[in-house]
Amino acid sequence: MTTQILTVKQRFGIIGTSPLLDRALDVALRVASTDLTVLVTGESGVGKEFFPQVIHAYSARKHNKYIAVNCAAIPEGTIDSELFGHEKGAFTGALEARKGYFEEADGGTIFLDEVAELPLPTQARLLRVLQTGEFIRVGSSKVQKTDVRVVAATNMDLQQAILSGRFREDLYYRLGTVPIVIPALRERREDIPLLFRKFASDVAVQYRMPAVTLDAAAREMLRNYYWRGNIRQLKNVAEQISAIEQTREITPEVLAKYLPHQGAEAPMAAAQTMAGDDAGMSTERELLYKVLFDMRSDINDLKRMMSELMQEAGLRREPPHDIKALLPSPSQGAHYAPTRYTPREYEKYDSPSEVYAESEDVTEEVPRERTKADVQREQIIRALKHNNGRRREAAAELFMSERTLYRKIKELGIEDN
Image (cartoon, rainbow, N blue to C red; front, side, top):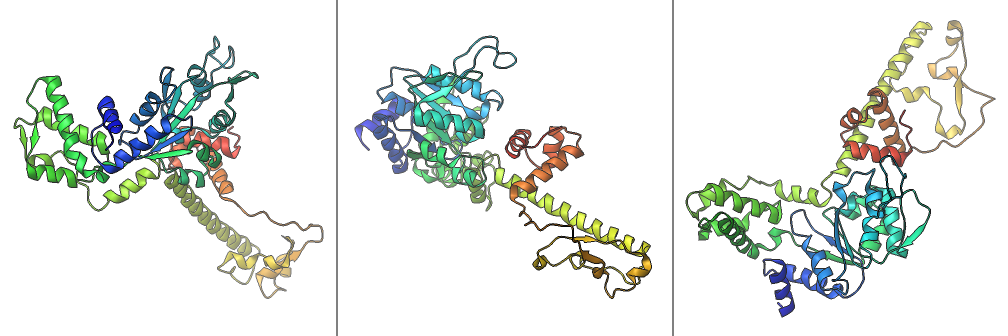
């Protein structure tokens, strides 16, 4: 460990001797003197918020503003105004012009936490700022310039977000000029007893009580626990034990009461956390499954309807079990339309499928393949109609959040009547 890294740990209260942690701090210090964009990644609760502060404090911008923005905490309808400002009268409630964070932080550093939660239109605006340093206030046509160092952070797997269409690939490469990966707590087990002792000591000083300590078996149990919530969870456990337990030396039996059981599903849960806490991919799978079930129901209804029509027409045979037998072969390359026949004319044919004749008035056209977007559009429209346009109920039916439904409606160009 270098002297500079030790100084940084003391200044910002960073506890740990893990080589992975030291490596992340070393990268932060090396990149601080430049103006390169930095992307900090890691699971929720690992302490990503410290690294933008370190980068700003050791940069040439340290005497200018440092602004931290939680992108997930700002409503989608106002986030452009918060980041880039707005003009008077730009929208209802805009009683005066207002500077955005990028304008306020001119010459300094802006930290975009949970950057993967930005809507796609806002991502396009952010990309322009990163490329040219230019932005436009909401409700204005005047281009303005800003000189801002951007550090972003996320606990989401951005590669998966790109594949699912929720994050721009070009923005990913702009933000990730220098990536810094923060290790999970279970990857730096040697630091766990140190962190517990620090949190227990802080509680003892704050509430004027003796600090709790761990015996050897309890320390080993603490090190071997999975810690899905990382440092945030460890701090919570230390505070609970300090406040509740009367005995000051903690044994494994006492410690076990404060550690939620995590079986074989723990590694799977961590992998899901890195793939995105909002479970966007799972939402889309549920949506596609629902579409398939509805399509199967529609085909069964169509079979029953065809059977009833043929029985009413006096056909001697039951319709084929597979409805595809009633349709023309795709290899014929033309569209087909049914021709009207009397019940007696039906009897001339050996198979009910022969009542379909080629129409001379139909022109050839190549059918367009249905895309994933088409399927999603149809399902969202159906849910909105089923719930009379109420988005909250439609979102619940589609197994997605109301915010995700709102974004899908905009992305797919759905007219919500």
